[in-house]
Amino acid sequence: MTSLPWSIEVVVGSGMGFCSGLFGLGGSSIGTPILRLLGLPALIALASPLPLTLPSAIGGAIAYRNTHLIHWRIAVSTSLWGSPGVIAGSLLTKFLHGTVLMLFTALFILGVGMYGLSGLRNRATPEPRAKLNERIVPYWSPLVGLINGLLANGGGLLLVPFYQLGIGLELRAALATSLATVALMALPSTIVHTALGHIDWVLTGWLAIGVFPFTYLGSQLALHLPTPILTRLYSLFLIALALYFGYIEITSLLPK
Image (cartoon, rainbow, N blue to C red; front, side):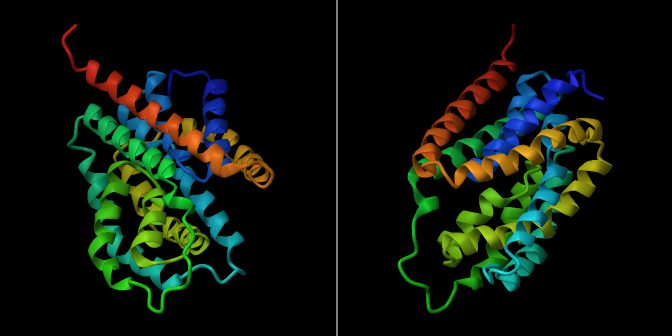
């Protein structure tokens, strides 16, 4: 059990959910650095938010079920090819120093911020491709899975650009298909991290109390706010958070 007050954990979960719902970009990723900056052990901060990605992804996939935007063949293929990477990445955390994992997390968040700031995420596909580039799935899915397991991340932030820019899905289809894939891939990662003792389920529960209602609130606000501008501002925040978090982790290694 963590040393944080439950109220702080609920606030962190609320921030994660609100950012996820409003921006659809990096909401779950900010949980790890914030929990770490609040003093939690690296592996607990890394993996405890992970179980929340599973019900969120399932809920999102259900919401898209009647839109015909989910490419199930791509989602299943990605999961099958990516699951060995997920398991390997999750097991690898047992042998890596916590600070190394936190620095990888900082780099990942930096990449998410740069992706959002670039505008690639909202780039419209001018016309459907005659044939999707599905042949790359077996080659790239294991790497996506490895990063997913290593950073205890649902993987959606890697899958959306992979599906959009690599395979050729338009943005809404990339988002919908990534949710289905996350729902399939998050389970093995959660099982391995649970077996390794990296998940504090009490912490996860308090985070969930904040995550789910504020994800809905953020989603509703996104319908009425100029999200492209806000997304770029939020991306700048992610970049600043990644740089500050990385600096703190590096300086913690230096002799006092």
